[in-house]
Image (cartoon, rainbow, N blue to C red; front, top):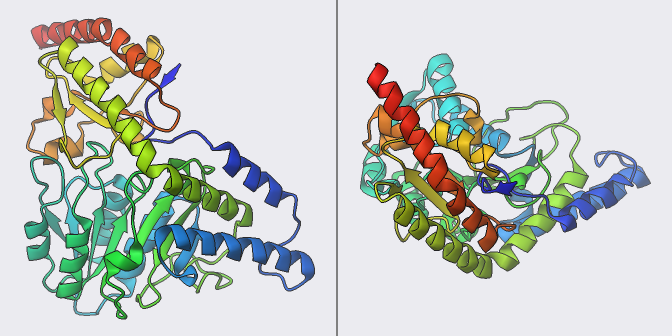
Length: 393
């Protein structure tokens, strides 16, 4: 099989696996005071310091989690619960990941939050002016660094500055972008010593080659943040529970390797994505590439096929040995239009007629050629199926 769904998850790095296995040989609990516990504590704190170096924050600001969804929940709910009592609005750009959308929806339905939507620009990035206008008197703001479907990278430095100027705490979702976009938390924050502006940033291990079930939320030491999990008060009281020292060690290794490879790997992936995009346009001239042409994640290719349903194309390509997606894996198995494509101004039909092809560390030129070889027949059959369905409706 040719795997071209790295935005959903990327292969485990051998170095991360080895780091995880080495720590599992240790016995104990990092919160215990005896020798075994303190040995694990040293592993945990070493991992925290190494993650902090990669993300340019203080070690105490790294809160280990079970992955991106928990990190987003802690970031958004935690800021909401610690908000100013007179503020109830959450600034929420269109096209966010469902980890954020569903969290905010729950806060609105159960806790009385008001949602201030922010439009996307035509290329899928967050409109900075609209974002700035929505901040006045808001409880908090949240935003993707890069859209997880079309891959467009937003101007997060401008978003962070606008939030700081407005006195609004900001959470950034870097789960899908940290492998490709260098993020210096302290620089983006402006080294501020107050609870506003950028105060939280989410990452997930399985997007960078660490095990599934690992992740982190960077929380500024100055942030006002409530907890989602309560218990032993570990990790500044923000994330109680026995800390996963093995997972933390694996995450640290994966992030370090990702950072060291980022520049060269981005060039390589961009060249592969350019070849893939050009090949798709040559084979299916009516196809439209969505997202920013110049500010996008290097391995993302998001395509609208106006005459074929994306779900049908996905199944036909899978049958031919090529694995892609129609959007976020968090909606796997649910046939519904892409909310991101709808946010770009397209209709329901177009929002069901997209494919997301994402390249990663293991992707090769042969993978790209395999996709292009399988596409014409898959597209012919998918378009014929769509035409039959239209004639019967």
